[in-house]
Amino acid sequence: QVQLVESGGGLVQPGGSLRLSCAASGSIPSMYTLGWFRQAPGMQREFVADINSGGRADYANSVKDRFTISRDNAKNEVYLEMYSLKPEDTAVYYCNLRTIITARGHGYWGQGTQVTVSS
Image (cartoon, rainbow, N blue to C red):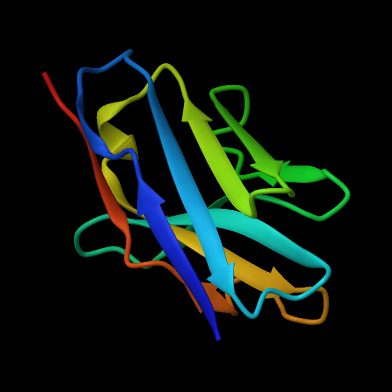
């Protein structure tokens, strides 16, 4: 089993920045993709960004050029730097780990961290 623990959420004003972190522990596979999803009230969980073991990152169009994902393989951690935040970025953000044979949107999940963008 893999455990994922997110941190760094909170309340921020529009245009502000936040940094989310996620630490993975347990039976971590040798090659895996780490990512972030989010779920706003009444909405389905949606993909935000992910990064594979080689460092290749992919982003949802809605966050491209505003969010940056990175990872520290030595620490088994992934980070999400969020800039120019908008009210529509308000959601619970979930960390995700999947193996190379697992489809996006599946795998292991953290408990989520709330991000609220409001003045």
